[in-house]
Structures are given as structure tokens and as C-alpha cells.
Image (cartoon, rainbow, N blue to C red; front, side, top):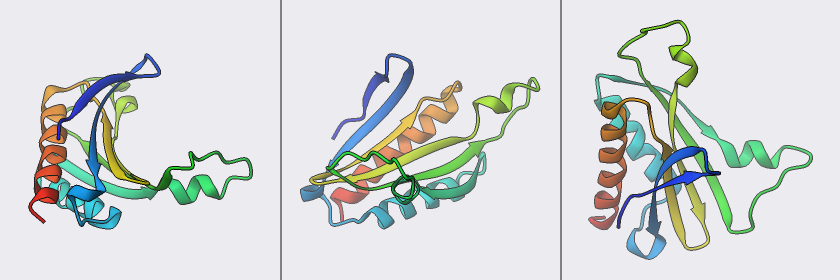
Length: 135
């Protein structure tokens, strides 16, 4: 399994991993918990919350959710290493999404403006794929 890089809507640099359900016995909850543990173990990151994007969207009167999507969660955290300018927090916090579809989990994040953040998020997502393959 390979982490893909692409521009979402020609604007947002995203890295994404497709984890086929046949390659893992994990659930959305287990994948989210794995990411939460990674964040908690990293002293330069601070866990903020897990947001149930799927439930929130379903509650909207005019919601739209693709038929193949069954769950969508955002694990929200921050790399708070520097505050070089008052506007810097506008590019924070970060999140990694875990979306369950009919046949796979899609784990994605938007690239951070700092190499350390991208390296850590990539490491966590790739580790998630390895952990899923190993049970």
C-alpha cells in the first residue's frame, strides 16, 4: 500500500492511503485509536479531539454524502512548535481523516507547511497500514 499525493480541487495538497477492507480486520474505531495513540506518543504534537464528520453531516437538513461512505472521522491535533507571527495559527490545527467506504478505508491528510509535520503524519499513516497488515 502506497501513500498517494495529489491536489484536491486543484488547491489543497493531500496525501492519502487506501486500505482495502480485505487486508485488515480493523474497524474505523481501531484506526482512529491507533492515530490517537501516535499523536499522544509524540511530544511535539497535542491531541485536540476526534470529530465525527459523518454524523455531523447527516444531521444537516440538506446533507449530501456519497452512497459508498459509511463513516468519516477526523483526528484533530496540533504541532505547536513555533508562533512566528500572529497569523500563524490560521494554518493550524492539523487533522487526519479516516473514512470507511464499501470496500476500503481512506486515510488522508492535507500537507502541513512544515516538513516535520508531513514526515510525522506520513510515518503514522504508513505505520497504520503496516499495523493493519500485521493484525
